[in-house]
Every structure is written in structure tokens, then in C-alpha cells.
Length: 330
Ligand code: PBG
Image (cartoon, rainbow, N blue to C red; front, side, top):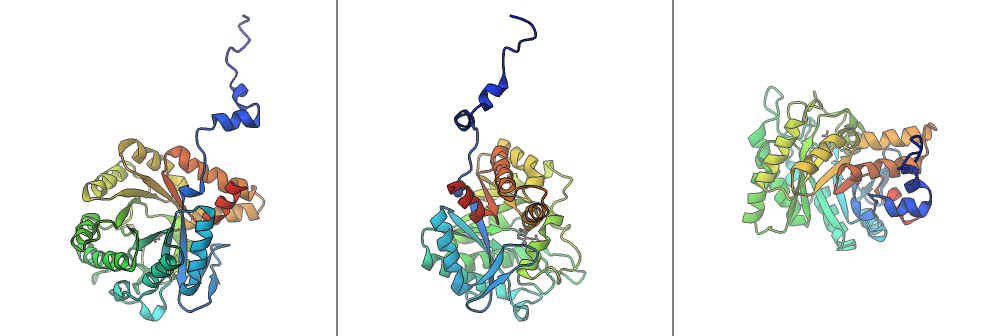
């Protein structure tokens, strides 16, 4: 054998479509996706969100159609977020505990339309506070941990009562997973699961979401006093360890694509499902890049979602869920 002739040619494995299909280590499926949906007041409404091109808020009476669309494409679960009317936002976020609020009505509407679709609800106060923070603030404007946690427990119970299958605390208060778990048990809600936003970073990628829920203009200051520093990864593992010890059924890393190292590390270190949230700013980045001709939209969508799987994500919360599911179905 001549020294110059390679004994191993990696390109053999890439030579034909069937060979590539046979050797693929990861595959995307619609069942990998959780589809976030925004709810608005009124009836018969679809409100497009300018900073999230292609995404709309839906009134409660139209959310069932969306759930049916998810079901028809094999998307197992939707995540619901409300745009609370301004008049119902307050210092202490009382509307979060109203059993007849937008989110509770939307949960029931999804369950009525599509009992087989899972419903995940966001536990945090930012869609309900007049100041746009995820918790209650003191006189100095600081988010109070334990006082907030008590309200989050009540909020989670109200959502579970409305029919939420998974409650997902996204507020980053300390100790709230344990408090919510024990309150759910005491209330006989042992089947309500908790997906902890365990490693949630204080990110610049949340802007369009804050438009979607109407909190961007209200937010005073930033969320760095409770969300994580993008510089840190060891800390993410400590956050996950605490949430696991407190009873989280699954954990989430957020944002997604810029934090795949965290997804991979959590997957390696812990024996539980790990989800990634491809957040609003990531979605917008893909849409704007495609619109500007920087890449082909469908290919950008599928490649980024596949990258989450390769990093070890069990599933992905993505505004592209329906587009991606359609692409996968072909
Ligand atoms: C707040 C919350 C945020 C997102 C989900 N829940 C924004 C924030 O923390 O300010 C962001 C999701 C996205 O950007 O798509 N509880």
C-alpha cells in the first residue's frame, strides 16, 4: 500500500442519500417540539407581533384551532403565554391568581379542543406586573425572593386547577420548585409535572417576547438580579442540581443556540430530560437573516433545530414548531 493512499476515506459515508440517511446520528421529529403560543383578550382576534414576524397572538376562542394544528402535525405540547390587558396589570400581579384569567381560559380552550395535546404554562409574574419584573419588588425596586415564591405557588395551583399538564416556572427565584412541588402534592395534583427553567440567562434575546406579552415598555431596569450571568456555566449545573433536588421532572436551558454548551453539560451530568428554549430573538434572527438573503429559511430552521438534538436536548421550545413539522413531514 502506498503511503499517500488513505486507508480510511470518510467521504464514503457521505457518498449517497441512502448512505447519509443510514448513518445519521440524529433525526428531527415533530414530537421534539413544544410550540409557544401567545394569548390576547377579545374574541375572533389574531394580532401579528411586529418583532416576531410570522407569529401572532390569538384570542381564547381561536386558540383551539392552533392546538388542532399542532395535533395534526404531531406536535405533542403547546406552551401558553398571555398578553394581559394593561388595566389588569398591577404592582402585586393579582391577575396571575385569577382562575378566570386569559391563561386559565386558554388552557381550558386547548383541552376542550384537543384533549390529547399537552399544555405547559409559564409560572412567573412578568405578564401581570405593572413594572414588568417576574416577581414582586420592594421599595428599592429589588425583586423579593420568598414573597414572590409564595405568589408563584398560588399561580401554579391556579394553572394546574385550570388543567395545565406541566407548570414551568421561568422566574429564577430560589426555592420555588420545592415550594410548588409540595403545594401540588398537598392539593392532590401529583400528576402535574414541573419543567424548571433551571438555567435561564439574563439575555438580550428576549426582546420580541417582551413585545408579545406587552412587558417590554414597562420593564424598569434589567433582570440580572435573578437571571443568570451569560459568563457562567458551573453555576448552571448548580442551578440544575438544586431544581432536581427540589423535584423538577425536567429542566430547561434558555436561550438555546448560544447556550448549547450548557445543554450538553446538563445532559452529561444529570439523568433527566433537558429541554432548550430557542427564544424569540433567535427566531427573529433566523427570519431576518433569511429575509435579507443570508441563507435559505427552511434550511436554517432545520439545521438549528437539529443542532439542539446533537447537543443532547430531549426537546425544543420553538416558534418554528409548525414550520419545522411541515418541513419534516415533507
Ligand atoms: C419571563 C419569560 C421570558 C421568556 C419566557 N418567559 C422573558 C424574560 O425573562 O424577560 C422569553 C422567551 C422568549 O424570548 O422567547 N418569565
